[in-house]
Length: 529
Image 1 (cartoon, helix red, strand yellow):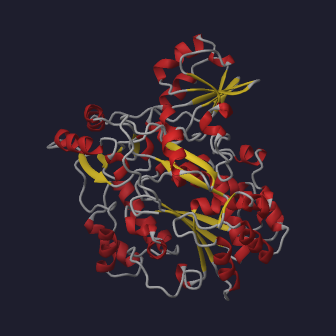
Image 2 (cartoon, helix red, strand yellow; image 1 turned 135 degrees about the vertical axis):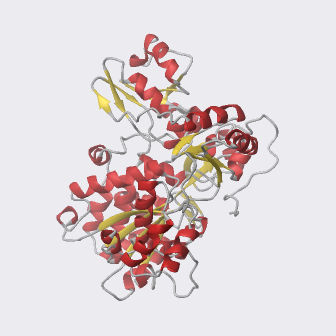
Image 3 (cartoon, one colour; image 1 turned 180 degrees about the vertical axis):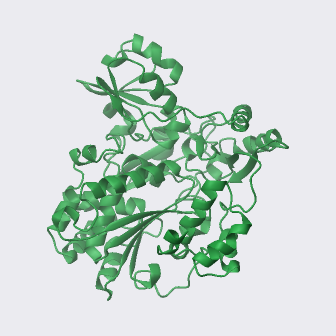
Protein backbone atom coordinates (compact mmCIF):
# COMPACT_ATOMS: atom_id res chain seq x y z
CA UNK A 1 0.00 0.00 0.00
CA UNK A 2 2.90 2.36 0.73
CA UNK A 3 4.19 2.02 -2.83
CA UNK A 4 0.79 3.08 -4.16
CA UNK A 5 0.60 5.96 -1.69
CA UNK A 6 3.96 7.29 -2.86
CA UNK A 7 2.82 7.26 -6.49
CA UNK A 8 1.06 10.40 -7.79
CA UNK A 9 -2.63 9.59 -8.13
CA UNK A 10 -2.04 6.11 -6.74
CA UNK A 11 -5.39 5.64 -4.98
CA UNK A 12 -7.32 4.07 -7.88
CA UNK A 13 -4.49 1.62 -8.70
CA UNK A 14 -4.41 0.70 -5.00
CA UNK A 15 -8.15 0.07 -4.88
CA UNK A 16 -7.96 -2.02 -8.06
CA UNK A 17 -5.16 -4.09 -6.51
CA UNK A 18 -7.13 -4.73 -3.32
CA UNK A 19 -10.26 -5.73 -5.23
CA UNK A 20 -8.29 -7.93 -7.66
CA UNK A 21 -6.77 -9.83 -4.74
CA UNK A 22 -9.98 -10.41 -2.76
CA UNK A 23 -12.79 -9.85 -5.25
CA UNK A 24 -14.01 -6.84 -3.29
CA UNK A 25 -12.78 -4.08 -0.96
CA UNK A 26 -13.42 -5.12 2.62
CA UNK A 27 -14.78 -2.17 4.62
CA UNK A 28 -12.41 -3.15 7.42
CA UNK A 29 -9.48 -2.20 5.16
CA UNK A 30 -10.67 1.34 4.48
CA UNK A 31 -9.05 2.86 7.61
CA UNK A 32 -5.72 1.26 6.64
CA UNK A 33 -6.00 2.66 3.11
CA UNK A 34 -6.95 6.07 4.49
CA UNK A 35 -3.93 6.11 6.78
CA UNK A 36 -1.55 5.11 3.96
CA UNK A 37 -2.84 7.92 1.73
CA UNK A 38 -3.11 10.44 4.57
CA UNK A 39 -6.82 10.90 3.90
CA UNK A 40 -9.93 10.51 6.00
CA UNK A 41 -12.02 7.36 5.99
CA UNK A 42 -14.92 9.34 4.54
CA UNK A 43 -12.73 10.58 1.67
CA UNK A 44 -11.67 7.04 0.76
CA UNK A 45 -15.24 5.81 1.11
CA UNK A 46 -16.39 8.64 -1.15
CA UNK A 47 -13.99 7.57 -3.90
CA UNK A 48 -14.95 3.89 -3.60
CA UNK A 49 -18.67 4.57 -3.82
CA UNK A 50 -18.27 6.96 -6.76
CA UNK A 51 -16.97 4.24 -9.09
CA UNK A 52 -19.31 1.47 -10.15
CA UNK A 53 -16.58 -1.17 -10.41
CA UNK A 54 -15.59 -1.07 -6.75
CA UNK A 55 -17.50 -3.37 -4.38
CA UNK A 56 -17.52 -3.39 -0.60
CA UNK A 57 -19.48 -6.64 -0.36
CA UNK A 58 -18.16 -10.02 -1.43
CA UNK A 59 -19.92 -11.04 -4.67
CA UNK A 60 -22.02 -14.19 -4.66
CA UNK A 61 -20.07 -15.60 -7.59
CA UNK A 62 -18.75 -14.70 -11.04
CA UNK A 63 -19.76 -11.29 -12.41
CA UNK A 64 -21.87 -11.53 -15.57
CA UNK A 65 -22.32 -8.15 -17.23
CA UNK A 66 -24.93 -7.77 -19.96
CA UNK A 67 -24.59 -4.77 -22.25
CA UNK A 68 -27.69 -2.57 -22.23
CA UNK A 69 -26.38 0.22 -24.50
CA UNK A 70 -28.14 1.29 -27.69
CA UNK A 71 -26.07 -0.68 -30.22
CA UNK A 72 -26.64 -3.96 -28.40
CA UNK A 73 -30.28 -3.09 -27.76
CA UNK A 74 -30.75 -2.76 -31.52
CA UNK A 75 -29.52 -6.33 -31.93
CA UNK A 76 -31.71 -7.97 -29.28
CA UNK A 77 -29.97 -6.95 -26.08
CA UNK A 78 -33.19 -6.39 -24.13
CA UNK A 79 -34.25 -10.02 -24.55
CA UNK A 80 -30.80 -11.24 -23.51
CA UNK A 81 -30.90 -9.06 -20.39
CA UNK A 82 -34.35 -10.30 -19.38
CA UNK A 83 -33.33 -13.93 -19.87
CA UNK A 84 -30.08 -13.43 -17.95
CA UNK A 85 -31.95 -12.04 -14.96
CA UNK A 86 -34.27 -15.04 -14.89
CA UNK A 87 -31.50 -17.59 -15.43
CA UNK A 88 -29.22 -16.12 -12.78
CA UNK A 89 -31.87 -15.53 -10.13
CA UNK A 90 -31.06 -17.27 -6.85
CA UNK A 91 -27.82 -18.77 -8.18
CA UNK A 92 -24.17 -18.27 -7.24
CA UNK A 93 -23.65 -15.59 -9.84
CA UNK A 94 -23.99 -11.81 -10.09
CA UNK A 95 -25.92 -10.61 -13.14
CA UNK A 96 -25.67 -6.89 -13.73
CA UNK A 97 -26.16 -4.42 -16.53
CA UNK A 98 -23.33 -2.47 -18.12
CA UNK A 99 -23.45 0.26 -20.72
CA UNK A 100 -21.04 -0.61 -23.53
CA UNK A 101 -18.37 -3.28 -23.62
CA UNK A 102 -16.83 -2.07 -26.88
CA UNK A 103 -18.18 -4.99 -28.92
CA UNK A 104 -20.94 -2.96 -30.53
CA UNK A 105 -20.72 -4.32 -34.08
CA UNK A 106 -21.30 -7.93 -33.05
CA UNK A 107 -23.58 -7.55 -30.05
CA UNK A 108 -25.43 -8.29 -27.93
CA UNK A 109 -22.30 -8.40 -25.79
CA UNK A 110 -21.81 -10.09 -22.43
CA UNK A 111 -18.74 -10.14 -20.20
CA UNK A 112 -17.98 -12.82 -17.60
CA UNK A 113 -15.27 -11.65 -15.20
CA UNK A 114 -13.73 -9.69 -18.06
CA UNK A 115 -14.08 -12.39 -20.71
CA UNK A 116 -16.10 -11.05 -23.64
CA UNK A 117 -18.84 -12.90 -25.53
CA UNK A 118 -20.43 -11.62 -28.74
CA UNK A 119 -23.65 -12.23 -30.69
CA UNK A 120 -25.30 -13.55 -27.51
CA UNK A 121 -28.88 -14.80 -27.74
CA UNK A 122 -31.45 -15.63 -25.04
CA UNK A 123 -30.53 -19.28 -25.63
CA UNK A 124 -26.75 -18.92 -25.43
CA UNK A 125 -26.88 -16.71 -22.33
CA UNK A 126 -28.08 -19.76 -20.39
CA UNK A 127 -24.93 -21.64 -21.39
CA UNK A 128 -22.72 -18.65 -20.60
CA UNK A 129 -24.17 -18.30 -17.11
CA UNK A 130 -23.99 -22.06 -16.54
CA UNK A 131 -20.32 -22.14 -17.52
CA UNK A 132 -19.65 -19.15 -15.26
CA UNK A 133 -21.23 -20.86 -12.26
CA UNK A 134 -19.27 -24.05 -13.03
CA UNK A 135 -16.10 -21.93 -13.28
CA UNK A 136 -15.40 -23.43 -16.70
CA UNK A 137 -12.02 -22.15 -17.85
CA UNK A 138 -11.95 -20.28 -21.17
CA UNK A 139 -9.73 -21.42 -24.04
CA UNK A 140 -6.25 -20.07 -23.30
CA UNK A 141 -4.85 -17.42 -25.60
CA UNK A 142 -2.42 -18.93 -28.10
CA UNK A 143 0.37 -16.42 -28.67
CA UNK A 144 2.19 -15.92 -31.97
CA UNK A 145 4.24 -19.09 -32.40
CA UNK A 146 5.37 -21.90 -34.70
CA UNK A 147 7.37 -22.26 -37.91
CA UNK A 148 6.00 -22.67 -41.42
CA UNK A 149 3.18 -21.13 -43.44
CA UNK A 150 2.00 -17.96 -41.69
CA UNK A 151 -1.66 -17.83 -40.71
CA UNK A 152 -2.99 -14.66 -39.10
CA UNK A 153 -5.62 -15.17 -36.41
CA UNK A 154 -6.94 -11.95 -34.81
CA UNK A 155 -6.40 -11.33 -31.13
CA UNK A 156 -8.84 -8.41 -31.16
CA UNK A 157 -11.43 -8.67 -28.38
CA UNK A 158 -14.33 -8.86 -30.85
CA UNK A 159 -12.66 -11.72 -32.72
CA UNK A 160 -11.85 -13.53 -29.47
CA UNK A 161 -15.48 -13.08 -28.38
CA UNK A 162 -16.48 -14.83 -31.61
CA UNK A 163 -14.13 -17.77 -30.98
CA UNK A 164 -10.74 -16.73 -32.39
CA UNK A 165 -8.81 -18.35 -29.53
CA UNK A 166 -10.51 -21.67 -30.26
CA UNK A 167 -9.52 -21.34 -33.92
CA UNK A 168 -5.92 -20.48 -33.02
CA UNK A 169 -5.80 -23.43 -30.65
CA UNK A 170 -6.90 -25.81 -33.43
CA UNK A 171 -4.47 -24.33 -35.96
CA UNK A 172 -1.58 -24.66 -33.48
CA UNK A 173 -1.95 -28.44 -33.82
CA UNK A 174 -1.44 -28.34 -37.59
CA UNK A 175 2.11 -29.20 -38.66
CA UNK A 176 4.00 -26.58 -40.63
CA UNK A 177 1.97 -23.59 -39.43
CA UNK A 178 3.22 -20.34 -37.93
CA UNK A 179 0.46 -18.47 -36.11
CA UNK A 180 0.54 -14.69 -35.85
CA UNK A 181 -2.06 -13.06 -33.61
CA UNK A 182 -2.83 -9.81 -35.42
CA UNK A 183 -5.46 -7.14 -34.90
CA UNK A 184 -8.79 -7.22 -36.70
CA UNK A 185 -9.10 -5.88 -40.23
CA UNK A 186 -12.37 -4.30 -39.11
CA UNK A 187 -14.81 -6.59 -40.95
CA UNK A 188 -16.31 -7.74 -37.70
CA UNK A 189 -19.23 -9.63 -39.22
CA UNK A 190 -16.62 -12.03 -40.67
CA UNK A 191 -14.82 -12.70 -37.39
CA UNK A 192 -13.00 -14.86 -36.73
CA UNK A 193 -11.44 -14.03 -40.10
CA UNK A 194 -8.11 -15.73 -40.66
CA UNK A 195 -5.57 -14.92 -43.36
CA UNK A 196 -3.00 -17.19 -45.00
CA UNK A 197 0.22 -15.69 -46.30
CA UNK A 198 0.76 -16.87 -49.90
CA UNK A 199 2.93 -15.71 -52.83
CA UNK A 200 -0.19 -13.97 -54.18
CA UNK A 201 -0.73 -12.09 -50.92
CA UNK A 202 -2.89 -12.79 -47.90
CA UNK A 203 -5.93 -14.95 -48.58
CA UNK A 204 -8.84 -14.42 -46.19
CA UNK A 205 -11.31 -16.98 -44.86
CA UNK A 206 -14.25 -16.27 -42.62
CA UNK A 207 -16.11 -16.50 -40.44
CA UNK A 208 -14.11 -19.53 -39.29
CA UNK A 209 -14.97 -21.70 -36.29
CA UNK A 210 -12.75 -24.27 -34.61
CA UNK A 211 -14.72 -27.08 -36.20
CA UNK A 212 -13.98 -25.66 -39.67
CA UNK A 213 -10.20 -25.96 -39.31
CA UNK A 214 -9.85 -29.63 -40.26
CA UNK A 215 -11.89 -29.17 -43.45
CA UNK A 216 -10.01 -26.01 -44.36
CA UNK A 217 -6.65 -27.74 -44.03
CA UNK A 218 -7.90 -30.67 -46.11
CA UNK A 219 -9.03 -28.21 -48.81
CA UNK A 220 -5.56 -26.71 -49.09
CA UNK A 221 -5.73 -23.85 -46.59
CA UNK A 222 -1.94 -23.61 -46.40
CA UNK A 223 -1.82 -22.80 -50.12
CA UNK A 224 -4.84 -20.50 -50.12
CA UNK A 225 -7.04 -23.25 -51.52
CA UNK A 226 -10.70 -23.05 -52.45
CA UNK A 227 -13.30 -23.48 -49.73
CA UNK A 228 -16.79 -22.15 -49.10
CA UNK A 229 -15.31 -19.82 -46.47
CA UNK A 230 -12.63 -18.46 -48.82
CA UNK A 231 -13.13 -14.72 -49.33
CA UNK A 232 -10.20 -13.99 -51.64
CA UNK A 233 -7.21 -11.68 -51.34
CA UNK A 234 -7.79 -9.47 -48.34
CA UNK A 235 -6.73 -6.30 -50.14
CA UNK A 236 -9.18 -7.05 -52.98
CA UNK A 237 -12.22 -7.19 -50.70
CA UNK A 238 -14.57 -4.28 -51.33
CA UNK A 239 -14.48 -3.21 -47.67
CA UNK A 240 -10.71 -2.79 -47.85
CA UNK A 241 -10.54 -1.23 -51.32
CA UNK A 242 -12.91 1.56 -50.30
CA UNK A 243 -10.64 2.72 -47.47
CA UNK A 244 -7.73 5.12 -47.06
CA UNK A 245 -6.04 3.85 -43.94
CA UNK A 246 -3.73 6.29 -42.21
CA UNK A 247 -4.33 5.83 -38.49
CA UNK A 248 -5.19 2.15 -38.94
CA UNK A 249 -2.54 1.44 -41.58
CA UNK A 250 -0.94 -1.36 -39.53
CA UNK A 251 -4.02 -2.73 -37.74
CA UNK A 252 -4.55 -6.29 -38.95
CA UNK A 253 -1.20 -6.22 -40.74
CA UNK A 254 1.26 -6.58 -37.87
CA UNK A 255 1.61 -8.58 -34.70
CA UNK A 256 0.62 -5.84 -32.22
CA UNK A 257 2.74 -7.37 -29.46
CA UNK A 258 5.95 -7.24 -31.55
CA UNK A 259 8.05 -4.07 -31.53
CA UNK A 260 10.17 -5.58 -34.32
CA UNK A 261 7.11 -6.01 -36.52
CA UNK A 262 6.04 -2.45 -35.74
CA UNK A 263 9.40 -1.01 -36.75
CA UNK A 264 9.52 -3.16 -39.89
CA UNK A 265 6.26 -1.53 -41.03
CA UNK A 266 7.50 2.07 -40.78
CA UNK A 267 6.97 2.35 -37.05
CA UNK A 268 9.04 5.00 -35.20
CA UNK A 269 9.69 6.87 -38.47
CA UNK A 270 7.54 9.77 -37.27
CA UNK A 271 9.32 9.96 -33.92
CA UNK A 272 12.75 9.86 -35.55
CA UNK A 273 11.81 12.77 -37.80
CA UNK A 274 10.26 14.73 -34.93
CA UNK A 275 13.41 14.43 -32.82
CA UNK A 276 15.35 16.07 -35.64
CA UNK A 277 13.07 19.10 -35.52
CA UNK A 278 12.53 21.77 -32.88
CA UNK A 279 9.44 21.40 -30.66
CA UNK A 280 7.90 24.47 -32.32
CA UNK A 281 8.43 22.91 -35.76
CA UNK A 282 6.67 19.72 -34.66
CA UNK A 283 3.71 21.73 -33.37
CA UNK A 284 3.58 23.64 -36.65
CA UNK A 285 3.63 20.39 -38.62
CA UNK A 286 0.63 19.08 -36.69
CA UNK A 287 -1.13 22.44 -37.13
CA UNK A 288 -0.48 22.46 -40.89
CA UNK A 289 -1.91 18.95 -41.23
CA UNK A 290 -5.34 20.18 -40.18
CA UNK A 291 -5.68 17.38 -37.61
CA UNK A 292 -8.58 18.00 -35.26
CA UNK A 293 -9.54 16.20 -32.09
CA UNK A 294 -11.23 12.90 -32.87
CA UNK A 295 -12.90 12.65 -29.49
CA UNK A 296 -15.93 14.69 -30.53
CA UNK A 297 -15.12 18.38 -30.07
CA UNK A 298 -12.94 18.57 -33.22
CA UNK A 299 -10.69 21.23 -31.68
CA UNK A 300 -7.51 21.81 -33.75
CA UNK A 301 -4.81 19.61 -32.24
CA UNK A 302 -1.96 21.94 -33.17
CA UNK A 303 -3.52 24.91 -31.38
CA UNK A 304 -3.96 22.87 -28.20
CA UNK A 305 -0.34 21.74 -28.37
CA UNK A 306 0.95 25.28 -28.93
CA UNK A 307 -0.95 26.48 -25.86
CA UNK A 308 0.81 23.88 -23.72
CA UNK A 309 4.18 24.54 -25.40
CA UNK A 310 3.89 28.25 -24.61
CA UNK A 311 2.69 27.68 -21.03
CA UNK A 312 5.37 28.38 -18.40
CA UNK A 313 6.65 25.75 -16.01
CA UNK A 314 9.10 22.83 -16.01
CA UNK A 315 6.49 20.06 -15.59
CA UNK A 316 3.87 19.29 -18.23
CA UNK A 317 1.86 16.19 -19.08
CA UNK A 318 0.38 14.30 -22.03
CA UNK A 319 -2.89 12.54 -21.21
CA UNK A 320 -4.57 10.11 -23.58
CA UNK A 321 -8.31 9.87 -23.04
CA UNK A 322 -8.99 6.20 -23.75
CA UNK A 323 -12.19 6.13 -21.70
CA UNK A 324 -14.27 5.27 -24.76
CA UNK A 325 -17.74 4.77 -23.33
CA UNK A 326 -20.45 5.87 -25.76
CA UNK A 327 -22.58 3.11 -27.25
CA UNK A 328 -21.43 2.23 -30.74
CA UNK A 329 -17.82 3.26 -30.15
CA UNK A 330 -15.04 0.70 -30.34
CA UNK A 331 -12.44 2.32 -32.61
CA UNK A 332 -10.14 3.26 -29.73
CA UNK A 333 -10.23 -0.29 -28.41
CA UNK A 334 -9.35 -1.73 -31.80
CA UNK A 335 -6.40 0.64 -32.22
CA UNK A 336 -5.04 -0.01 -28.72
CA UNK A 337 -5.31 -3.76 -29.22
CA UNK A 338 -4.22 -3.77 -32.87
CA UNK A 339 -1.39 -1.20 -32.91
CA UNK A 340 -0.50 -0.06 -29.37
CA UNK A 341 3.00 1.13 -30.32
CA UNK A 342 1.49 3.74 -32.64
CA UNK A 343 -0.32 5.32 -29.69
CA UNK A 344 2.86 5.32 -27.60
CA UNK A 345 4.77 6.88 -30.49
CA UNK A 346 2.14 9.60 -30.90
CA UNK A 347 2.23 10.42 -27.20
CA UNK A 348 6.03 10.58 -27.23
CA UNK A 349 5.98 12.97 -30.19
CA UNK A 350 3.44 15.10 -28.32
CA UNK A 351 5.62 15.07 -25.22
CA UNK A 352 8.65 16.25 -27.18
CA UNK A 353 6.60 18.92 -28.95
CA UNK A 354 5.26 20.58 -25.78
CA UNK A 355 8.04 19.84 -23.30
CA UNK A 356 6.33 17.10 -21.29
CA UNK A 357 8.28 14.30 -19.66
CA UNK A 358 5.39 12.07 -18.60
CA UNK A 359 2.27 10.69 -20.21
CA UNK A 360 -0.78 8.88 -18.89
CA UNK A 361 -3.20 6.62 -20.76
CA UNK A 362 -6.55 6.41 -18.96
CA UNK A 363 -8.24 3.23 -20.21
CA UNK A 364 -11.71 2.05 -19.27
CA UNK A 365 -11.78 -1.09 -17.15
CA UNK A 366 -14.10 -2.80 -19.65
CA UNK A 367 -11.10 -3.20 -22.01
CA UNK A 368 -8.84 -5.81 -20.34
CA UNK A 369 -7.21 -6.89 -23.63
CA UNK A 370 -6.33 -3.28 -24.49
CA UNK A 371 -4.90 -2.74 -21.00
CA UNK A 372 -2.73 -5.84 -21.37
CA UNK A 373 -1.56 -4.82 -24.86
CA UNK A 374 -0.63 -1.32 -23.71
CA UNK A 375 1.25 -2.50 -20.64
CA UNK A 376 3.24 -4.98 -22.73
CA UNK A 377 3.95 -2.28 -25.32
CA UNK A 378 5.25 0.15 -22.67
CA UNK A 379 7.69 -2.48 -21.40
CA UNK A 380 8.85 -3.34 -24.93
CA UNK A 381 9.15 0.30 -26.01
CA UNK A 382 11.21 1.10 -22.93
CA UNK A 383 13.52 -1.83 -23.66
CA UNK A 384 13.98 -0.58 -27.23
CA UNK A 385 14.82 2.95 -26.08
CA UNK A 386 11.63 4.40 -27.53
CA UNK A 387 10.65 5.47 -24.00
CA UNK A 388 12.76 6.27 -20.96
CA UNK A 389 15.51 8.67 -19.96
CA UNK A 390 17.08 8.96 -23.41
CA UNK A 391 14.55 8.42 -26.19
CA UNK A 392 16.40 7.13 -29.28
CA UNK A 393 19.60 8.66 -27.95
CA UNK A 394 18.21 12.19 -28.24
CA UNK A 395 18.56 13.20 -24.60
CA UNK A 396 14.78 13.66 -24.40
CA UNK A 397 13.15 11.78 -21.51
CA UNK A 398 9.57 10.53 -21.64
CA UNK A 399 7.66 7.88 -19.70
CA UNK A 400 4.14 6.55 -20.12
CA UNK A 401 1.88 5.17 -17.38
CA UNK A 402 -1.24 3.08 -18.06
CA UNK A 403 -4.07 3.81 -15.63
CA UNK A 404 -7.37 1.93 -15.45
CA UNK A 405 -10.75 3.55 -14.89
CA UNK A 406 -13.42 2.06 -12.67
CA UNK A 407 -16.71 2.18 -14.53
CA UNK A 408 -17.60 5.88 -14.26
CA UNK A 409 -19.01 7.08 -17.58
CA UNK A 410 -18.46 10.72 -16.64
CA UNK A 411 -14.70 10.17 -16.69
CA UNK A 412 -14.83 10.35 -20.47
CA UNK A 413 -15.09 14.12 -19.93
CA UNK A 414 -11.54 15.45 -19.85
CA UNK A 415 -11.58 17.26 -16.52
CA UNK A 416 -13.40 14.43 -14.73
CA UNK A 417 -10.75 12.12 -16.17
CA UNK A 418 -8.00 14.32 -14.73
CA UNK A 419 -9.66 14.23 -11.31
CA UNK A 420 -9.78 10.44 -11.54
CA UNK A 421 -6.11 10.25 -12.54
CA UNK A 422 -5.33 12.25 -9.41
CA UNK A 423 -7.10 9.59 -7.32
CA UNK A 424 -10.29 11.53 -6.69
CA UNK A 425 -13.97 11.22 -7.52
CA UNK A 426 -14.45 11.92 -11.22
CA UNK A 427 -16.22 15.25 -10.82
CA UNK A 428 -16.22 17.70 -13.74
CA UNK A 429 -14.14 20.81 -13.12
CA UNK A 430 -15.32 24.30 -13.90
CA UNK A 431 -13.66 25.98 -16.91
CA UNK A 432 -11.66 28.16 -17.10
CA UNK A 433 -8.92 27.38 -16.42
CA UNK A 434 -8.47 24.97 -19.31
CA UNK A 435 -6.43 21.77 -18.84
CA UNK A 436 -3.88 23.17 -21.31
CA UNK A 437 -2.99 25.70 -18.60
CA UNK A 438 -4.04 23.99 -15.35
CA UNK A 439 -4.46 20.30 -15.98
CA UNK A 440 -3.15 17.12 -14.35
CA UNK A 441 -1.78 17.84 -10.86
CA UNK A 442 -2.29 21.53 -11.67
CA UNK A 443 0.23 21.53 -14.54
CA UNK A 444 -0.20 22.38 -18.26
CA UNK A 445 -1.60 19.27 -19.92
CA UNK A 446 -2.40 18.08 -23.43
CA UNK A 447 -5.53 15.92 -23.37
CA UNK A 448 -6.12 14.11 -26.67
CA UNK A 449 -8.05 10.99 -27.50
CA UNK A 450 -6.62 7.74 -28.87
CA UNK A 451 -7.21 8.36 -32.57
CA UNK A 452 -5.88 11.93 -32.43
CA UNK A 453 -2.60 10.78 -30.87
CA UNK A 454 -2.48 7.64 -33.00
CA UNK A 455 -2.61 9.72 -36.17
CA UNK A 456 0.35 11.94 -35.25
CA UNK A 457 3.12 9.43 -36.18
CA UNK A 458 1.80 9.16 -39.74
CA UNK A 459 1.64 12.95 -40.06
CA UNK A 460 5.26 13.31 -38.95
CA UNK A 461 6.45 10.39 -41.06
CA UNK A 462 4.78 11.48 -44.31
CA UNK A 463 4.57 15.23 -43.79
CA UNK A 464 1.66 17.53 -42.99
CA UNK A 465 0.68 18.11 -46.61
CA UNK A 466 0.10 14.43 -47.33
CA UNK A 467 -2.51 14.33 -44.57
CA UNK A 468 -4.00 17.75 -45.36
CA UNK A 469 -4.49 16.70 -48.99
CA UNK A 470 -7.22 14.31 -47.85
CA UNK A 471 -10.74 15.37 -46.87
CA UNK A 472 -13.00 18.28 -47.70
CA UNK A 473 -13.23 21.88 -46.49
CA UNK A 474 -11.97 22.28 -42.94
CA UNK A 475 -12.36 18.54 -42.33
CA UNK A 476 -8.88 17.38 -43.30
CA UNK A 477 -7.48 13.90 -43.30
CA UNK A 478 -9.41 10.75 -42.56
CA UNK A 479 -12.18 9.76 -40.21
CA UNK A 480 -12.73 6.38 -38.58
CA UNK A 481 -16.36 5.36 -38.95
CA UNK A 482 -17.76 2.81 -36.52
CA UNK A 483 -20.73 0.93 -37.95
CA UNK A 484 -22.83 -0.87 -35.36
CA UNK A 485 -26.35 -1.73 -34.27
CA UNK A 486 -29.00 -3.17 -36.57
CA UNK A 487 -26.69 -3.35 -39.57
CA UNK A 488 -25.75 -6.31 -41.76
CA UNK A 489 -22.02 -5.59 -41.88
CA UNK A 490 -20.68 -3.86 -38.80
CA UNK A 491 -17.10 -2.83 -38.27
CA UNK A 492 -14.44 -0.16 -38.69
CA UNK A 493 -13.99 1.95 -41.81
CA UNK A 494 -11.28 4.60 -42.24
CA UNK A 495 -11.52 6.90 -45.22
CA UNK A 496 -11.12 10.54 -46.11
CA UNK A 497 -13.85 12.98 -45.11
CA UNK A 498 -16.40 13.35 -47.88
CA UNK A 499 -18.00 9.90 -47.98
CA UNK A 500 -21.82 9.95 -47.81
CA UNK A 501 -23.95 8.42 -45.08
CA UNK A 502 -25.70 6.26 -47.68
CA UNK A 503 -22.38 4.80 -48.80
CA UNK A 504 -21.51 3.91 -45.22
CA UNK A 505 -24.85 2.43 -44.19
CA UNK A 506 -26.21 0.93 -47.40
CA UNK A 507 -23.22 0.17 -49.63
CA UNK A 508 -20.61 -0.86 -47.08
CA UNK A 509 -22.86 -1.65 -44.12
CA UNK A 510 -25.24 -3.68 -46.27
CA UNK A 511 -28.38 -2.10 -44.82
CA UNK A 512 -30.14 -3.53 -41.79
CA UNK A 513 -29.38 -6.93 -40.29
CA UNK A 514 -33.06 -7.91 -40.38
CA UNK A 515 -33.54 -6.85 -44.00
CA UNK A 516 -36.03 -4.11 -43.26
CA UNK A 517 -35.63 -0.63 -44.80
CA UNK A 518 -33.38 1.79 -42.94
CA UNK A 519 -35.65 4.15 -40.98
CA UNK A 520 -33.14 6.11 -38.93
CA UNK A 521 -29.40 6.43 -38.40
CA UNK A 522 -27.89 7.63 -35.14
CA UNK A 523 -24.86 9.69 -36.14
CA UNK A 524 -22.09 10.43 -33.67
CA UNK A 525 -23.26 8.07 -30.95
CA UNK A 526 -26.10 8.54 -28.46
CA UNK A 527 -25.07 12.14 -27.75
CA UNK A 528 -25.23 13.10 -31.43
CA UNK A 529 -22.65 14.45 -33.83
